[in-house]
Image (cartoon, rainbow, N blue to C red; front, side):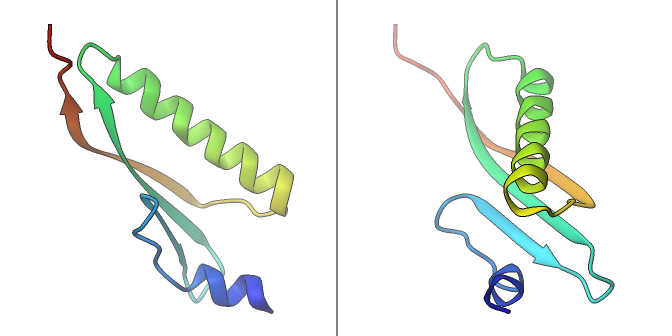
Length: 78
């Protein structure tokens, strides 16, 4: 179906890459930028939980892995 075709494609434009393995497992990679002073572990865990929750409740899909990659730390000028 169309959703399976979508899962096989990588979407870099919005910082999210979804990969479907041959065994049917789903891996989601999320790329983000955080502000200086943010608790990285807390934000990363929150992102993982929200991605898993959204996939399960909106699409009925369970992600095998949700990876969060911090691309940069943004420092706001004083």
